[in-house]
Length: 575
Image (cartoon, rainbow, N blue to C red; front, side):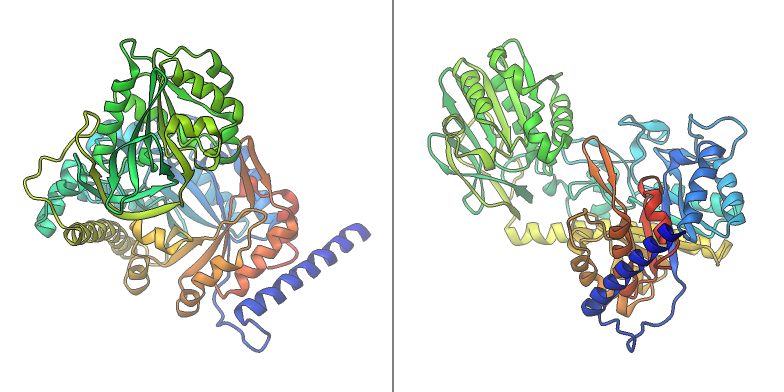
């Protein structure tokens, strides 16, 4: 008893300190109370935690220990249902006769915990495969400008919006839920969607040809992001951006050649990126058509392997089956082929030497967003034909051909647009995609409120407001003014050494002016090999700061990765 009491006192002191800090930041002194609103104390629960009754009981017991009053349980994930549905296939891991959502509701309500049905209403692939929905409706997915399929439902299509709306009504009409929660209800990137339906619908809406933004040849207009190399030495510039920054370069070294995409080209924001990449692979691969992909352990320690996955997909999409190689294999790698370096920024001295030897012997090398932090290495300067590093950039502009070369396709459009015309067309395209999500949420909201007016509609969004508008195409300001949602949950996720206050400060004016904002808090830190739960003291401090902001409450992500100690602390201190 002494140990527990002592610990609770320590946690309460931490909580008081956090409140004092948040009071300084947000003006929440005892004489400056925010208006009283119902306090949401929620937590997200993953679908894999409800596929057996035993798992449900364990998770709900932990939620109850944290004195949380709402669970956002994932019941539509990977394109499958975790409930009895006539519209979706049931997830194959669920035993026949067991209804996960019904069981969660019964057990949660017995503990006075509200249940919100969490829908991943965006990506519907199953471990990188099409999944049941897109297998049945392949034309429902968003398509990139180069034809890449995203496995993401296309909100521009009325039949897709109707399908999602039908899912919501199916749940609300058959289950006693307190809310329906949308997640990943956004665009997977600013480069989507160029499918035939969306191109036609946009033309009907604005009378503009969306093909002008597809960028099938140069010049091409887009938003470009990169970590460029600078100081051209021996490299030949084949294409550049309209501000003069070199974009595609070719360098000869020994018997081999090197192509540099001087931006993050595997985002594939224009079709011509893939055309140049495909031509480069064919140009360098040689008669044996050997294509290698570097899986750099050194780079992954800082940046992970996501870019390796993107590079692998890109190579396959241009018609090759790459062989993944590690850094230790470079010294003996056959030079009869091309090695692709997908966003490999960190390169050791030994690897740089091995790459130089590979090219010298006749190998081809393709850098995608080059090794900027490592460019001071003499071998890297020699093989890239570049001397220094440039500054990170994110800019809208034109990619322009420099002279004639077989790697660079030209546009066949009869009349070139001005920058102002491209900007106007891009603004329309952004607005059109934002409106598609507005239509979805408005249609859902109207149907749901007619059937179940007390059921809440909530949406999770990222914390960076510029990205929400320009990349995710979420018009959250309109949601606050119209009948779209009841609550926006801002995912204010920070790592263990990052401050939460700046994120909340950005949202503070909206929190003050609206009763519709709650804050999502991440209770763990991701690592390559798994995760580490944040310390109870850190979780308590973030909760205290979030509550002091005046938000409607908090939702923790997620119960599976919140430690028992943090839940125990939450059950005694902040609520």
